[in-house]
Amino acid sequence: MSRPRSFADPEGGPVVDQDRHGTDMAAMEDAAVAVLDGLPDWIWDCQPPVPVERIAEDRFGLRVIDTPDPSTVAGAPDPGENAHLSGLLLPARGEIWVHSGEAQRWPPRRRFTIAHELGHWILHRDAGHPVMCRAAELAGGRVITGALPEIAPADKPKERPPLPIEEAEANAFAAALLLPAVQIRAEHATCGGSIGRLMEIFESSNAALERRLRTLGLSWSD
Ligand SMILES: [Zn+2]
Image (cartoon, rainbow, N blue to C red; front, side, top):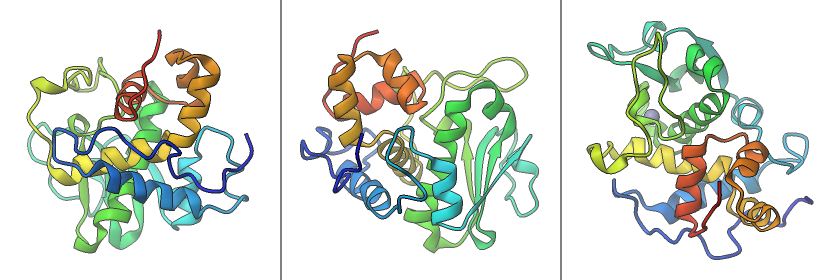
């Protein structure tokens, strides 16, 4: 696919004005499109998947570091009892910390966590304080079992309380960045809406992709 002149959605953006948490979906789309439009070819040649780690490091000068437990990183706030952190942004140090166990078990989850933390950096870092992101607040993954605490299934959003608005905004930004509307629409048309094929092309989880397709008003097949 050649580089589009702009990553703005040719269909005019999300069909959802707000998600159930109150996120301004068009604003999150614009924020992600601004990042994608500003990338030089040496960072991304526009072939999916979006190289989110390179974008964080080479475009924004952040360091992405894996750790077995983000809550133990020096400078991390106390996450409280039994909190399982997927990611941590330390704005003063320009660092994104990612839960390495999740990353090994589910590589798309790592991509989504990095994109989510990058969203906090772009949208919310004015506050200056570290941002802890609990597993249950990240929308890009699936249930992780075994040694890790279980995460509420992403396919039952109505059973969970609304997220803090900054967490919901970071999730919407991450989805728009990793699954660019212009490319999703093009690949969706080519593969006939096959979710398995789209997961391969965009290195995405099923849950994140379904949510993105719903936001864009697209149907899919298994
Ligand atoms: Zn977060």
